[in-house]
Length: 343
Image 1: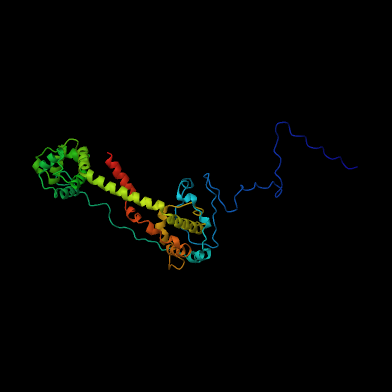
Image 2: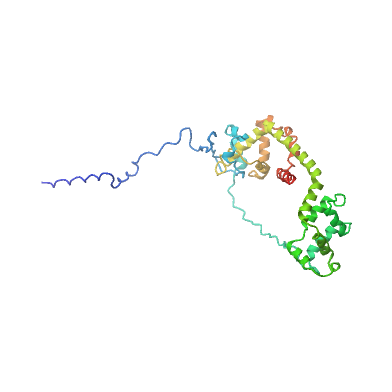
């Protein structure tokens, strides 16, 4: 007779035991479905309220636009929040034809020209007594514009005489104040003052003025206050007019939307695609992207495209009459000047 079957394995002890073996390949549970509302190739915005951004893939390899994507967290509250660049009807075939990347051997020429100029500056030489030749020459150039004796100059600083000293001279003087080493050298000098060089005698007179640096700073503030206040008022006014023009120019917003749509398509194969916005400094680089035949640029194509598809927006620069003047005002310079005025 056949042998009896082996007894079944004992059940695992209560409260644990080894895990069951994995299922055979192809018989495991199906992967979880994608989140509702998303399609393949579509991203998921990490900021609440932003719609998912679809990353379009060009049909062929095209040139990339080197813009700086705007951080998603900075999009709410800006013009980029309401843009619908995916609804722009791009001329895909023409874009791929004009800006397609040709498969050619790369030109690996490198610019081996090195700057062989010596930036170390003139060799510092000790002056006849105390100062270096370079330092003595710099101070001598400044003193050539001073037409009063050194003693009268010291008295003018002590009394804050704005009729004797000009602002430019005082500003240059602040850059030439004696260093700690020069102060120590001058104070340790025990010979006749007449034996010192012209620059040394001048610094020697400066050391006789108490609290020299704060005194000069106050002097410059007094001399330049009215002129600075006038310049700041004009710059702030011009800047305000330029910002007003930009805010009310709806045509400019539409043009930015077209640039965003085109850039997202051309960058669809790289990490810079699917952008909600870009840094506006990229607009100055539109002409840097050449067509495949190097006969035209992305800027020329954009102008032609807007002229044909959106002719009502082609004249938007006429709505920005104050921007050209306002662009000459540096926000950093104005902020820095305001900070100096508050000292």
